[in-house]
Length: 144
Picture 1 (cartoon, rainbow, N blue to C red):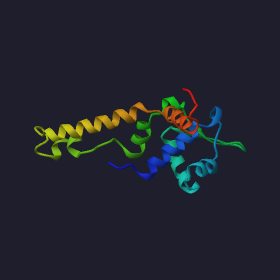
Picture 2 (cartoon, helix red, strand yellow):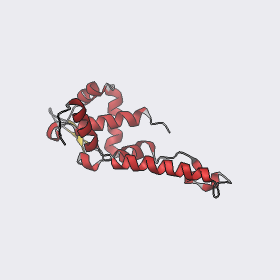
Picture 3 (tube, helix red, strand yellow):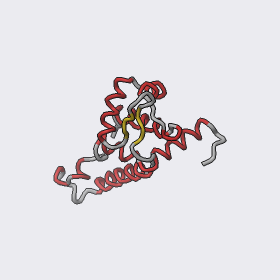
Picture 4 (cartoon, rainbow, N blue to C red):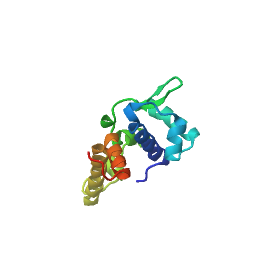
């Protein structure tokens, strides 16, 4: 499994929004500069993230984008599921009919365990968790 650039950039943009002081709107050019993503590509991502209910646009001179809900309520799995679809490491885990050996295959169980572990990790991490880690990384004296 390999994450797309779209998913990686979207997660970074959402992280940037989660770090905005007091949830203030951030303009695309600010996010783009900080995350080294082109403004044009970021515009396309924001349309997708808006349709997913993860961000909302704020109009006006001090407008931009904000998270649509608190950072603690947005899990990394939400982002991945919306942009990539469900995590699948082997077709036979999701659909036994793809392999005649699926019912008795002990290797299939390993793939199922891997898939479950990936989902558990992604489901356990929120944007708030990532923001705290980012702050801690920039400031070693930071206390949670």
